[in-house]
Length: 328
Image (cartoon, rainbow, N blue to C red; front, side, top):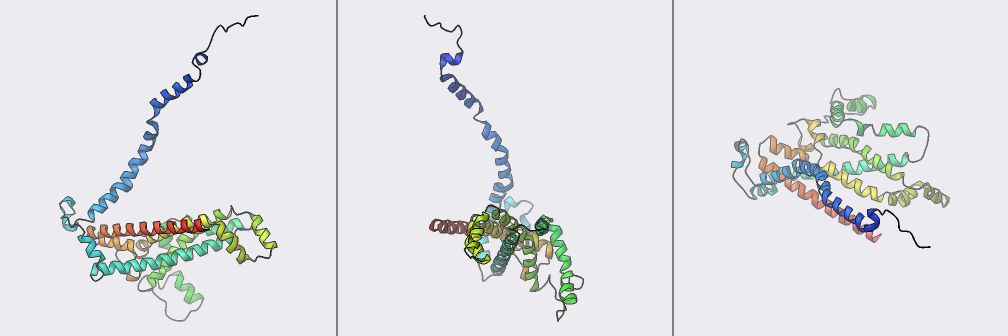
């Protein structure tokens, strides 16, 4: 019996695999622009929000943009590195004030990041095991993070008042500490007021990140170590810290950058022009140099140096972390 050929053959059967391939080519030629169109809004907003203002700020740092040239800042004389020479001269008034602000910011950042991380770690470890009421404590710990920044800092500003504030009332009227009630928002105590408010704002973020990281740590590790006689501190050092290392690498860097650039805390706590020398953080110092003395050239030069410093610290930190991870 002879084979009977089919009466009708589809185009795919006559062309074989070439038809789908040509179709893909045709669709590729038509829609090659689609990914670029989808990325275009993000690129435009990135240029408008970050790139163009950053380039403008760098340009302003090379000119003498003072109050005299604000109406037409394109006519401001070009100084080259003149603004940078003034602000890095520690023997001059401007350079000495900037160095003092930088040192205060370094001390402020180290204290806030260290204490906030320790508080967040303690809270995350304490709430790792299940017990009645754990959800309530988790919610309470996250309240400072959920409150709007300005509302929280204004509340602290009222609590730091000398005669009517809750802080002095608790310390001296309730606990009965000897001595006179101090001023918290002026003088040397302003630094500690800044530290307290910044820690109150930051530690719930550390708690949230570390608590999320602990969810990936198997309970079997703790149970096996407990059988071997490991105490809680040994479990934390040998199990919790190594397992949370990827979270801590990012967390510490983010907390450092946020705290070093903190502007809202001193601005709301002390006001626009009344910040004490002990609370002169560098972000607020740059604001004063730009918008109070109207020397935007100095302010822009300070901002550029701050950006370079943070980039150097970030790159050095990441290189150090990567080297330690390779050795481990």
